[in-house]
Amino acid sequence: MGCVSLQHWLAVSPLPVSQQTEQQQAALSMVSKVGQLDVNWPETSSKRALVNNHASFWAYKGQGQLLLDLGTAQSVSLNINGHVLSLSPSASLGKQLAFDIGSVTRNGLNQLALVDIQPLGASVRVVLPYPMLQDGSAEQAGFSLTELAQLDSLINREVAQGFPGAVLLIVKDGKVIKETAYGYANRYNSDGSPLANPEPMHSNTLFDLASNTKMYATNYAIMHLVQLGLLDVNLPIQHYINEYQGDGREQRLVRDLLYHNAGYPPEVHFHRPDNRHGAMFYSLNRERSMQLIASKVPFERERGTKSIYSDIDYMLLGLVIERITGKQQDDYLEHSLYQPMGLNNTLFNPLRKGVPITQIAATELDGNSRGGRVSFPADKGGIVRGNVHDEKARYAFDGVAGHAGLFSTARETASLAMLALHGGYNLTPVFSQAILQQFVRPSVSDHTMGLGWRTAVGGDLNWHFGPYASAYAFGHTGWTGTATLIDPYYGLVVVLLTNKKHSAVIAEGENSYYFAGDRFETGMYGSIMSKIYQAMH
Image (tube, rainbow, N blue to C red; front, side, top):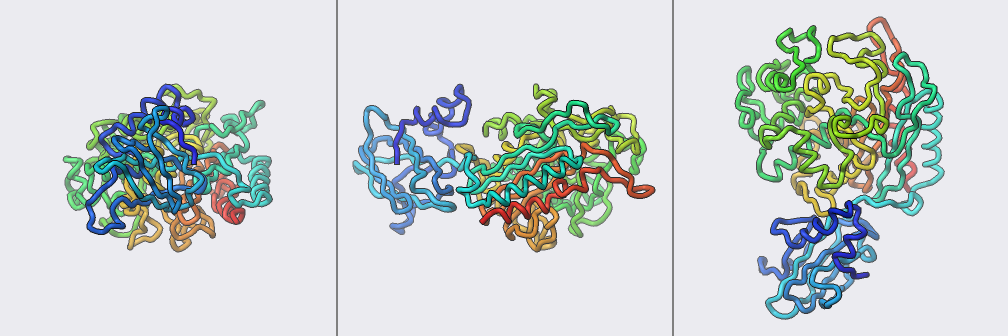
């Protein structure tokens, strides 16, 4: 194993150069815990000799870093998966060291133990960062190149037939083994005619994640607040939103919102004056919309009955986050989670924050009109691009809501998905494995639902996960054409981002219609996922 100084390791980290020294050197001087493992050894807390100074950590074969602050130690020996590392401080390297331990790591849980430390009374601080995305080889990861080529052919064939575009990213054991852009970020005029010069899709194109916002924004914030002890999902919602009263609201718990069984309707069209709940529920002002969901939206059924997927549930969770943190949801997430992870293209309202419109995939062709079939006064018309497609999020919540509004790239979405495998990223701890398991565990009343997450248990959601996903797989989808799959059993993360709604609206019957992009295999997810599992040997 090669040993390098902390300063040298910083120079090759993925953070911007201006942040490297400050963040990484601070890691070994912070009082609070960093990374997935942060211990001061030796310890004597247990009476069992082989419990003290032993720990496990997550890693992938060929990957991993170990940070040490030697303190007063003159020599230290550590055992990693049966390999002993002995070292003594040197004037050239200093007391704070970083090791590449990729030569001795393995997929899954790894073992670490303190063998010896000198002199008597000395101590050493050991920090293990969380796994980070690395670039890898599909062939070395055991994927069939022939099968992956067939997958490319399928998607490209559908692009030739009119599908707008997609980015597919596959992670196996922490390594990106495929990251491919297909088709076009902007392909059609508002009237559905082809652009003379369509704009190609790129791997760094930002997509409207739609309901994947629920997971990678709202759920993550909720899970983090639980980790911090600031939120208990078993408490009444009223504990966090004082005005949440009347009509049985006092009995609704935070977890009811996460399980989608609080009793709310799927949605309320706040953006339309003619919404079916009445003129009182018409709102184009974010503060007023928050007031409406806090105390006015009526229930359709009793709590605790069948789970009915509802945007209202996640609007309320967004309000819970804002009441606890005192910050608007986008400000809290972007500054507390995304930016510390180095995710600068994961954000709400990207056009307002300097992202060029040409870097964002277009969605619907003519506002939210469904090809001229729907009309409401707030609709601004034209190609929807850079503004959240969901009408409620855009017009009633100013682009920032708990159910929709987040934009991201495939790679940054994959980085967020890695959080759901490990609970943190690099030196940033977000939530513990205990909290992660609490949220992804299938509900006893509906095995397709965790606390927010959709699960592959039982095969009910094969249209999303495909037929080969393990019973441990979970993820979410988004109406604009986004699907994520996280399968801990296989160490697999799949991010499929499409702009399938950037297509013509086609009548199916007198009162029904669909987007052309919805009927392609790429836009229906399950066959793409199936092919990925088939390629994995």
